[in-house]
Image (cartoon, rainbow, N blue to C red):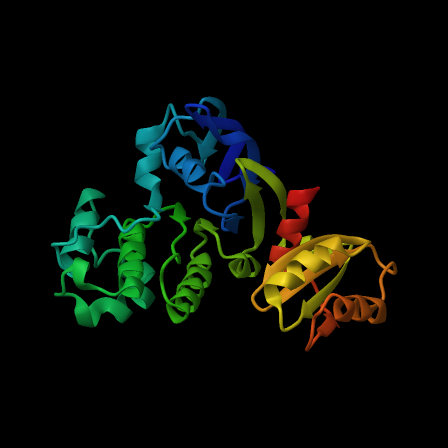
Length: 304
């Protein structure tokens, strides 16, 4: 990739005996919405803090807009926006005061870059005199994004920005990110929510500090090569145990009230599985073939 906006080569980072990142490498082109998808403890926050020049890597190199994260950290901080996972604005300052403060730090004003934030700020402007600590989770999220964008950064890092907010606010936030892409800002976002993967241009699936796969969401799903069924019964807990014992089943995962079972194609029949579940004491059995989602693909990669 020629002149990537974000470049990471063989980055590793440990905290004592815990390896948070283990030989991570990837590139992100200018203007892409790139997602890091993985559970808590996968290494997402450590990676973001390295790229935001807040933590030094143990080994490897990384650059943002051609600037080295170690040697050029002062220059990088002027061109990036960073939204940490935990709300970090000043609780005792109002919405307007927080935004003005961050604009002043970067030598700009709210008016100068208002076009970039207006679609977001117009939603919180009615509360501009309210203290940040008294905002709802969704409003705090929008304020934090405005503060991260007020200096018109070339790259923005959003570390689990939708964690802990309601479903409506999550949808609104991703709509805002899609609009931001039109400004040619490179956006890197992390999330533990697998359903948000489909909203990214490309995603990296990460677990235990290692990247398992990088691709477009639809390509990751297309590469899934197993038959997949959703199975339900009146005994959800026992269902998981009994499915694990059934010959030919590769994996069993709980998805709400259903169990997703994966297996090599053409080695099982619904009729035989139905008979087996009746014999093991299950009732109200439902079995249907389904298409995999990102979470199914993630779980498959974990057991390879």
